[in-house]
Length: 357
Image (cartoon, rainbow, N blue to C red; front, side):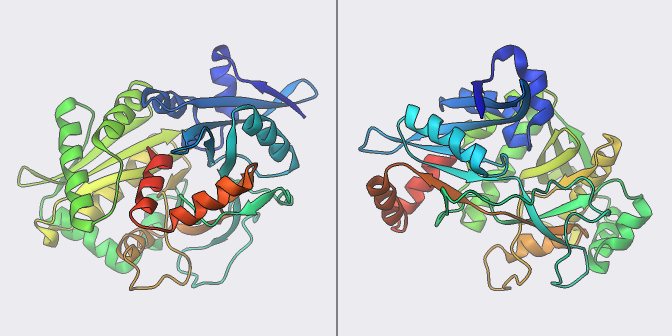
C-alpha cells in the first residue's frame, strides 16, 4: 500500500476516481466551510493513483479524541483498513465509520422482493466489488445512511420510463399537468429562500431532524458555484408548493434534499417535480438518478419513512442494497461508551448531529 495526501493540483484526477458526490472534491470544500476538519487521500498502485477518498473528523465531547467519518467511499478491504488505521492513529481517532458506495444486490422495478445479481449486463453502471470485507471492520450499530436506495436508469427512453412507473404515479403526473402545475429550474437567491422555507416547513411537519440553515446555505453556495447544484420548484397558481435541491456529479443526478407545503395536495406537485427531475437528468445526459435512500424490500407500512419510500418506488427505479455500515475501532473503551450513550435520547440526537453537521 502506498498512501499519500492528495494535493490541491490533483483535483481533476481525484474527481475521476471519486465514488459519489459526497466523495467529490467540491463536497469536501463545502464541508470545510462548516469548520469541519477534512482529510483527502489517495492510494497508489505501481506509482499510479488507484483509489481516492476523503473523511471528516468530529471531536468526541469531553475527550481528546475524534470520530472519523468516511461516507460513500471505496470497498472496506484490507488495503483500506491499513490506510485508515494509519490515518486514524495519526489523527487521534477512537474509531472510523465507513459507509461504502458498494452495491451487493439490486431488485428490479416491479419485481417483488426477488433479488437479482447486480453484476448482470442490465446494470453496467452500478458499482460492485466482490472482495471480502476485511476482518478489522466490525458491523456498526449506528448507520447514518440507509442501506437501501432507489436508483433509476436515465438512459431509457421517456416511453420506457413512463411504462416502468406505477400506474398511480403516471396518473398523478397527468393530474399535476391538468391542474396547471408549473415546474421551474431556478438558481437565483429568491428561489433558494423558497427552498429553505419549504424544507424547514417539511422538517417541522414530519418531525425529523434535518440539517440547519447554515449547512444548506453553504452547500448551495459551494456546489452551485461549482456547477453541481440546481433547484426545481413547482408552482401552482403562482404559489410555490414543492422545492428540490438536486446535485449532479460524474454520470449521476442526486436528490438529497427537498421540501413541500401541505397546501393543495390534490394537484400532485411532488409527482411532477420528480418527473421533471428525471427529464433534467436526461437533458444533462446523465445515466443514473440516485434518490438518496429508501427502506428495505419488506418495508413496513407503519414505518414513519414509508411514505417517502412508496413515493420513490412509484418511479420504477431499482431498489439497490449497499454493503452497509462498518466501524474500524482503535479505542474500545471510548467506542463502547460512545455507542451506549448514543442509544440514549436526547444524547442520541446530539451525537447524530455531531456526525452530520
